[in-house]
Length: 319
Image 1 (cartoon, rainbow, N blue to C red):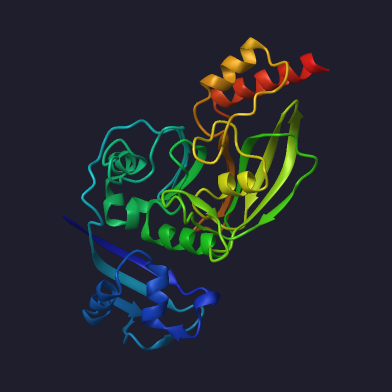
Image 2 (image 1 turned 90 degrees about the horizontal axis):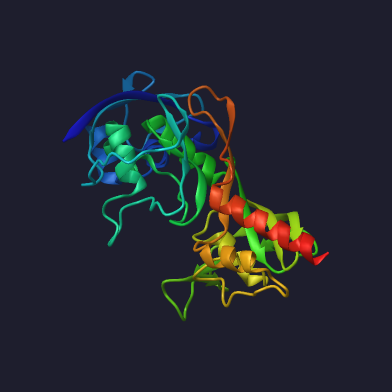
């Protein structure tokens, strides 16, 4: 199955004075270079209304028009999975992802994922790279996510992620009492001892996490985190690296640190909290068509609210 698409891009300043094929490789991230070359050679892509060659340079403000046939990008199956939609228009779908929902199909999770849900919600997504998914949240991390519904939106969101213009803030609850906020600037890569895990390693990719204290508890701390990069498991790895692992993290949390004098209610709450205490609360981006600055916020889920209430009650009892 294929879908015909007619759309246009205005060349942004960051891509001016570059070859057309290189510009399109960035704007159409997720499509192969051979596919892009075939569209150019077939005359399906024009520059300011005229045919163009792959090596021709483009300038800021040039108009690229596409009249192309988009192939399906995967053999995923649409599934009627309910989505908590925070915002939607022709270009963007912003959702509040629940904990437990896998974002993208993978071995062991071919169905029941966010991609399957998106395809049922917006069937044209099957022609977009990764069905419009431009960033991920871990399975057991909840919170706000944006999905592209158009090729223009996909290109814009990918560029905003790469240029760090897309702002993201997370709520994390960690073991240990922090004395102040700070920054973790430490490269992340595959853990050489456990290949299914990530770790701070000398040859990893650059990663920076900023954190500030939101609330202190007896034996625990709630922190707000902002990312300069988007490495796999970044917040979980970075906070564990500095000695403050997330509550409930099955991979990076280590042995649970039970606070002195904890009530039966707190111990039960900690025992029942079976995921990392991490929630993507806030997302800032620029609308790909209008240029309007948009902000979205996902309220804390019930399980995290219950955890925080239990920690507050324990802290008051210890005073």
